[in-house]
Amino acid sequence: MEENLIESRLSNLLKPVVPRPEFVQTVGNRIHAVRSTVVQAPTTPWKLLVLLASLLSLGILLSLVGRGLFDLLISQKRQAGS
Image 1 (cartoon, rainbow, N blue to C red):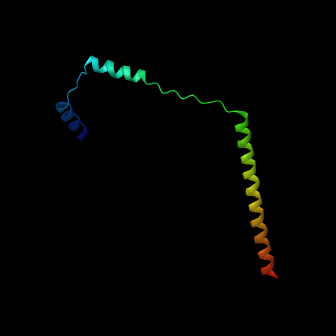
Image 2: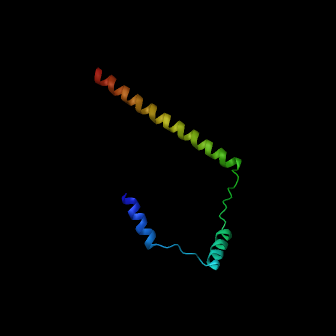
Image 3: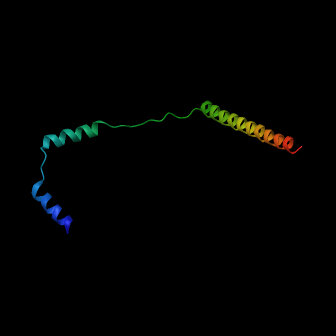
């Protein structure tokens, strides 16, 4: 009920405006003139190789750090138990 009242008041206050054809033409030309196309360069094999080597190195580093921490905790528990 309240929505109908608001809509009727707005329709009485706001009247549609027809834009000038020149304005529409200018805006249309601007929209069609600006074409944003993104061209992605093909990935070269050496970039892929560097990425894979980096990921492999990171995995090895994380596993070594994890293994070191695990061994440290185990050795501390053994010393505390003795």
